[in-house]
Image (tube, rainbow, N blue to C red):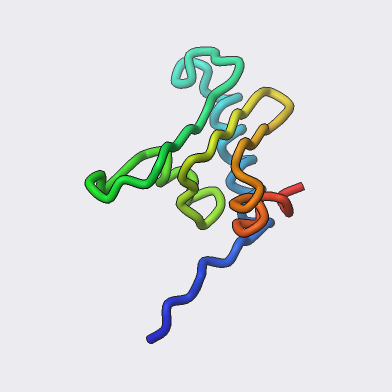
Length: 95
């Protein structure tokens, strides 16, 4: 069996982003009235088997995004990643 690369599903991404924002807006006690939240992942470490940030990236995009910063604000999403990564992972095609 050949290994298949994950496929980026733009519609699924936006559905999940909307679900995340719905939770944020409808549960102020859980989110503690935050104005923004950040997902930040560092370099890949084979000694760490599970990271919540990577799990959330995987849920949102279908990819484990290492060395990536995503800032969610009330009206915007900011992504900081290398240009090579953003083009290979389809981050450039989100908008």
